[in-house]
Image 1 (tube, rainbow, N blue to C red):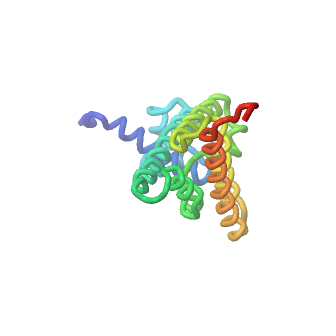
Image 2: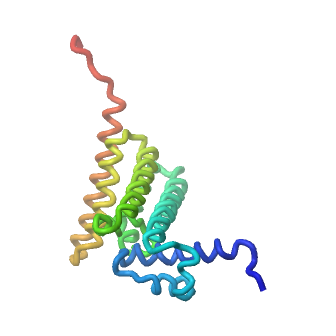
Image 3: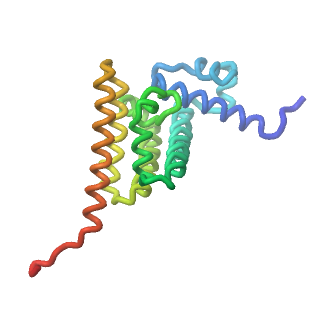
Length: 204
């Protein structure tokens, strides 16, 4: 009996979803294909009917995971748009929260893989780079700041989460998140002030 239309696409998405959870939690090199396939409820033998190799899976998973994170952050922003808070401030509060730090399996993949990416293939690094740029563009547009400030803002956000997850001291971890929130908001405030303050002429 033939599979229903769209079955293969759904199976492929199950594999990517399983990979995203695994890579976010354990990284790429420590996770085997059988582990990912088991997480998708499938056997290892079926992997190569969907992907050429693990590198292709990693690249497509990065794309999926960043899209997922952007959708989540957009929902956070939309939920708070009627509150006395800028959308980007709500995003910062969520991204640099203990909840996001502790739920790495569904969190942003950028801090999860940032330390490991330089050791992986050129193709994976290029895919990661493209998705990082997509994330920077999303955050920069939401914050309504220039690209340079956007680089600083995302670096602060991603770096703070990566360090907060890495340390064994829970208080230090919380302090890193708090400092990251303060720094991120300061970056926006400075960038916004610079764009709204007119330059004075020499004769002023």
